[in-house]
Amino acid sequence: MMSPTTCPKTCMIPRRALAPVLAMLLATSLAACQSAYYAAWESLGKEKRHLLKDEVENVRADQEEASEEFQDVLTRIKSLYGFDGGDLERVYDHLNRDYEDCRARADALGTRIDKVERIGADLFDEWEGEIEEIGNPKLKRQSRAKLTATRSRFRTLQTAMRRSESSMAPVLRNLNDYVLYLKHNLNAMAIGALKNEADSIEVEIERLIADMNRSIDEADAFLKTL
Image 1: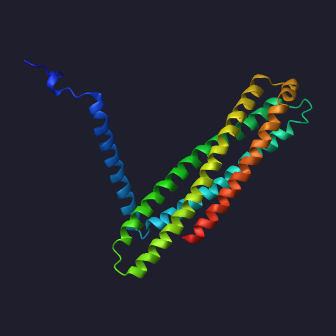
Image 2: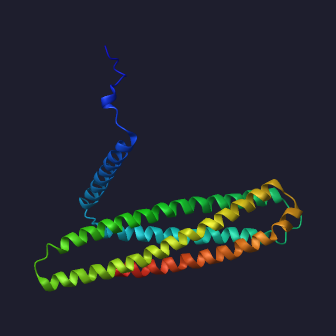
Image 3: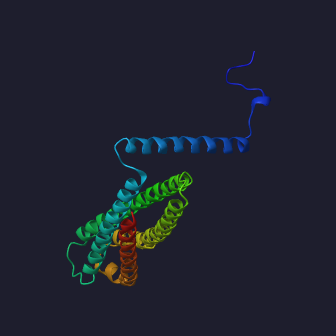
């Protein structure tokens, strides 16, 4: 008699055959969850355009806070230039906390941008479908023109958001190196050895803040179109 845990060769399915099936099931599950998410908000009077506006505003706010946090790190590093033998371990603790705040903010910002892109794509798909339901040719043309303009502005916003996000990666990587080196060498000589790295981090943070400011400007411009 065959054990419950055994299976004849005829019922064994190759992994290559299972992969697309599992991918389809996952996509269906995610789509169902997203539909339920939108339905819940619509029952409260919020359409996709309202949700997109909210999420763009959230990204904008996160970018402003991220700019301030990275600026705090830069100020902290600059304060080490004139270090004269004080409590270096205390300075390291503060710098490490600033770095951790920046890293957490970067992770949260990436998630926010993902959500903006997902809602934006769903909104435009819905808009495209609804245009086909319009019978009046003039109104149909006007609605499509509005969709084209809004989608174009959204792509510009996407580019700006992703550029500001990608600008954080090298800054965080170099900050991590800086903080770890300082942790392992808590002495005045280490400060001198880190001067070149500090100069490089300063340039990258200033570039990052400029990218974030551009993204914030694009968010303001896009919000006006909604």
